Image (cartoon, rainbow, N blue to C red):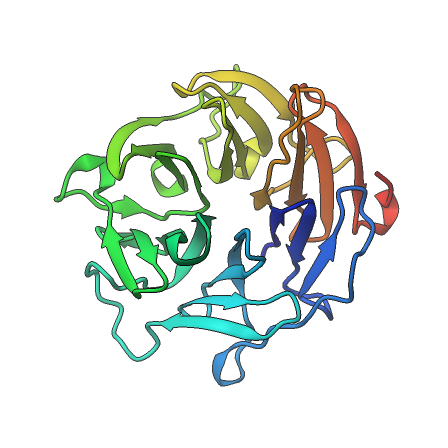
Length: 293
């Protein structure tokens, strides 16, 4: 189980799988803003959210992997939307979301569009979703209708671009205007045999990307628009300023790299740390041992 988070209008929503309150809002200084709410799973099962995405109308979209559903809630916890394939076999067909593990949101009201990534090795594992019309358009892996996605994870969108983590193939795929653009991998550290395992990412307005990777090479990376590694924002580890199996991140744009803040959740949802794009760690919260920002 891993934690998830999303950021909208200065409010950071955090989902923690084993917490008494599974969804709670904070500011980026780590102060709780409200009590939050708990989400139940279907048929008595635990709800396990692979990802969150908040839209500008403050709806919180959840990729419910265990429940095989895309769900949305308001800030009080009332469920507003459910798209569930629970009664459909795990078919690899366009329009079937299967078990969602990643979600990203863009647009407002009737123009809202979602991007949903789904679990497993599937041809139809990445969809652009219109929640108002309840339609979903499948994107082609590597631009090839005969290819398959291999274990997708986090997904992000910004303007014309969509990017999705594919840890099963040790790469990130990038799409422009709904068509495959390019794919990239980050090289291992010198002397390391570890594999690139991207788990979550965010797209910056200037074309760069922030990528969280897990496994032996847990890290947070700043990547150029063409996929070249620019900077390591956080290396792997359990101490403050390092990350261990990060599962989600978000970006609050600033006027420079030094003022742009990147909250990252790691350690199975037990800790949120806030970094800047110039590689500084501003502090941590949720973790009782490091509860200051």
